[in-house]
Length: 420
Image (spheres, rainbow, N blue to C red):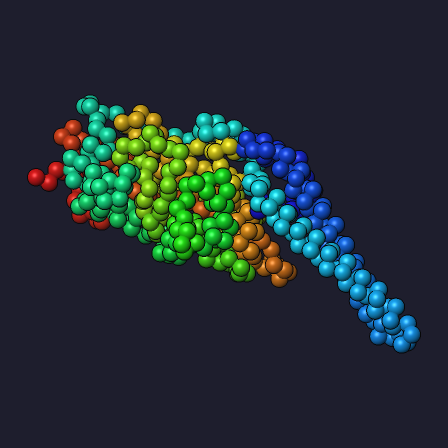
């Protein structure tokens, strides 16, 4: 949730953020009204409780003749207190609803607009060109025995697959390389649960506009995570962290699950958009004033990984209308995909400022020992989708695929060839 102090002091900043996202700025006024109503209800209840306490003392000192009248007044006052407390609870609930309806305030400098309104920050490498007709990742993978979509569909339905043989080793190599780079940079490697409670999923902001993307197990009231950002954010929920030595960093290795609702007919071929994939995700807790610099560090570590697999890519500053509700700023790294003659997202890193931590009650102590709301950030370090860019950019005329040097120790071969 956003900081109510910011809302009260500069509501136009929040309205501008809503407009930049393409969301309703009137929600800001609804939140201001709910905030004012709740504060008025709290003041009214506090005043009545103070009056009740004073009357109680007066009754204790009263003579028998005075006490009867005072007790009658006390009963009336108790009813008023009860009604005022009910109004306060209603005000609390109304404020919470209005508060959760507002997305994070977009960071200054982020571009406004929708999906196509990103700002290109840098292009690294030239789009791969071939002196032969290149194949797409699925044709390559099937010919090399790396992916089996047909049996994945037979076993689990559309957009499921088996990674087979060197395909499995390729994914494990990518994730192991990501894990090694993360731990070398001070991240604690985690294998988190992939089922989480509703309050954790909601706390990270995934049960808002994109709730239809999330798998829900109704009988158990648990959610399958679409990213290990969710359990890692919940890891310290309700805690006060020690950030005196700098950010706390975790790298989560997990399977991820997404319903891909509303994407039928889009990227249905191969493994670009699937219901289950594996990922190593970076997650940082830091002081709010350190969040922008931590965001740049996460982006730099993502770029190191992309350099290790040697694919052309570009870095974009994602427009406000394409941000998730929790993110104040997001940078994507998109790799060149020759078969599509375009760039496709491989990594994403988001600065969620204090939005998630406020919902999950994650704090740290400032230099005066006073608890303050922490900031959270996340960033992709490797996923199954990377196999797409890797196969297509490193293919040879004979249908084989070169394995990037950094992955050879994990895969065990330098070239992937058809296994007669």
